[in-house]
Image (cartoon, rainbow, N blue to C red; front, top):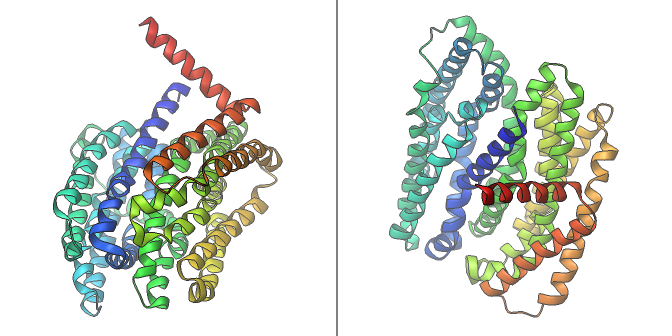
Length: 482
């Protein structure tokens, strides 16, 4: 693939990943004031429960499917066989999972809201975004996602106004997600034809795809179990409300951090398949540099802006979210490295077992720490446990990749970004610490952070930033000439 195509796919994927969460991000101020801390917390707790069932229904086949489709992108016959085989498996898994879920709901005190969330299970076989990512059609996903997320935004603004609207919000948001995935099927015929699938093909995909189920389980322990444990240990939905809002911001930022990796993954797989090891290393170094540049800026940026941002964005009842954001910002760095070392490298070169073990180690540490830290520090304890869990994952992965990748060179690239981030924080603290906490102050802080960070990187002669400036200049010159 040409560099120009990679850049375009990165931009489309970045927009799409942001769109996946941009609607909740925009609607957060409305929902915070309409549903309140308890309403947000109750939804967060119920959604964490249905998410466990979604993981079992998906069984890791979205990640597996994306990788397999990238293998057969030039073979239409095998592409169709692979697609329908995976879809059959996902449909069967979803059917049995729904039966168990309905039984579970019947004996749960949150039965009503859990039943309304069942559409997220129905979405599992409908969701073929993995296929479009595999064939690198990011533009199609982005355009359709934009219009449907706009509908989601209008729904919240027009219909969700008070705490009693919690069930209406749950049903509406679930239905919109259902439609989002359904429309992806409209153009499928252009890429996939009907294909006869025999049992041996399904058996093959079931055996190989199930390997990706364990990473999904491990990841869920420190992304979902935090919410479940918060509700159970604290005995209240309030801490879930704080944690949920902080996590929504974190998810938006994480999508930006991981955006390049989603685009590069098919390229890394293809390069490894051709035994182009130097090219694989080049992609990994490029991706890790991007992760450091973006995640470090976000981590220090949240330290600067959280105190002024939270009161006017979420409302005064969510003041504690500011503390959570400051802590969660630094988790982004290790989540980004986990994606680079784990998903982009270990999985791409066929070392899934090491990746799975690393996730279980991190998840186990996170689970144990949650038991003690949530009891004494509530949502802050959950954030700290997640942070230590992510560090553990990255350290374990590094032990196995240190002979194949130049880790010293990779981490040396991060020094400039830490220096720029620290300088950004100090400048912001000295110039804005006495300003009132409102949206105007947040705008000032954001502009100052961006300017200081990138000016520092230009002074430090960072290659990534300088190359980006050159590309922008060339693009502007072409625009002027045309």
